[in-house]
Image (cartoon, rainbow, N blue to C red):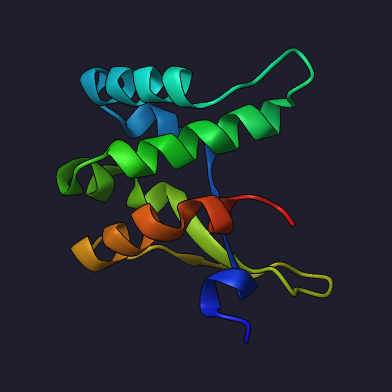
Length: 108
């Protein structure tokens, strides 16, 4: 059975990084550095996706509300035109993303 998070992807605008307080960014960067094994062959997209994933997992609701307008969902089964939809600025959405962000943010 295919679940919603297997059919939907999450993307972000690069302006997401400008919306984060420096202390929050530092906490996420520390967690990112300690938990991901990247090397010189890792693509920029891969590095950024891992970092945004870490950011989502370490952020509080206040900061999530700051970055939510920079996040969007899209169908992984699109044909030609990708339609994107904003992420809701809610606690429920943050909890869902914390649980499924790794499956949602990476391309299959």
